[in-house]
Image (cartoon, rainbow, N blue to C red; front, side, top):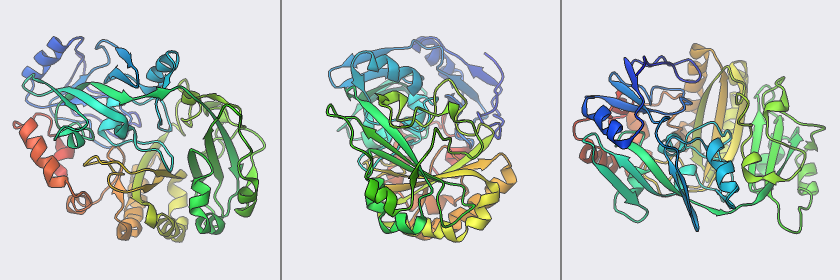
Length: 420
């Protein structure tokens, strides 16, 4: 037991008086039995109060670390970080289809917030879940599996249904990936051929500081390596958008040492060492930062980027860097990419809370016509009724939450503000 701490970025001081660290399901059950309010504390890589509570926070970090491999799936403990899970299953010849940009985040926390990687054909990390097991506030163990009536509502749960203790994830044979970085693509040409650009690899990201509304800073292309080897990234398309190969390793944030980034230059390596942008042993991104992210329907992606170009001058002073990437649709009720192929517009802000919130309000205003959905674990200020209108199954999730947690043990201020 210990006092609550702050989130990873230090912009949220948790209000909980105690942090409980059970080492077994029985201890977890006892912790819940004595707690009128509780939330699970993961790797703290959220930038809002989604993990906060006026009751107790529960860390699963000391629960047994389990990884069970099945023919086409893995069953894992909820608190495992992807950076710890991935090499373990790679050693057993398996892989996940996708990873987020950093491996430091926990499986359960990423899934509960709809976190994602990048790729035209790659869905969110939540979409790889085929089953999950959780403990309700009353200590009951509940398991749901893909195809069950409540499954699509229970995966991206915002931590509001119970304590997820284990998950079963889709897996496939291990594979290799190579990534290459190109500099200086012109936005006019990128947007004119947006579908071609995002199809350059299995995972493609564009980075910009918005200090120049005409030219993006970098284009990152990650591709699976077939047995026959890789051909060069389409040189005609690269030239057509005005990009050139980077002369050496690059970090997305200007002026930051690229040693923290995964290997570039087209050198093939295991999937888990290339799909993330950052290495597990380093602090990800800029370190001293805040983050926001908004997802729009892919059909609106180019227009949404044009809207951001129009306010580039307003955004640049508050930014470290912004990333544009794509995500394939899934069918999960509260997934930000649910029901639509999406373009994700990510913002890594300098650690000035007031400036970041002002910039976020500007972003939300210009993206409102495109039905932008905020990432659940990052900074946003959208009105709850506006968010609810973006999710066809919103009322169904609220009913599911009330049924699974009738006493509101997991209903913190974040969930209450949303009207869930």
